[in-house]
Image: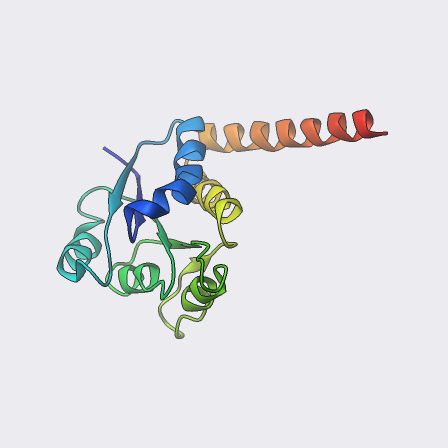
Length: 161
């Protein structure tokens, strides 16, 4: 059973959202990926959000561009944590997406990440951190991940200098 749902408003969002998937795979976390559009398939989105917990999900990572209603609409229909990833758009470079996700009304929280691939990667890591709250093995993996990232940074700096 998958613990995380990685959803996106359209298939074109996968280029960004695969960063979340790669992080989840790296940590051995089962996930499902789905295209669920708040605008084009609202009934499917509503059914997904209302039944996400019954499906066994513990965290939802939702990527959306443009009007970016997907994360907020899903969050309004579930008590599961929703992490929003603003997809970089052509029109406004993702600022429209970011504003749509980050400006949720009080009472309907959505964690909002950075625009684009960095945000998608961090959304995957944030999902891992949430799941690690009740999983010591996952906490150890996160600690090792951070140690490796620090080592790579130090090694890169030494090569630069």
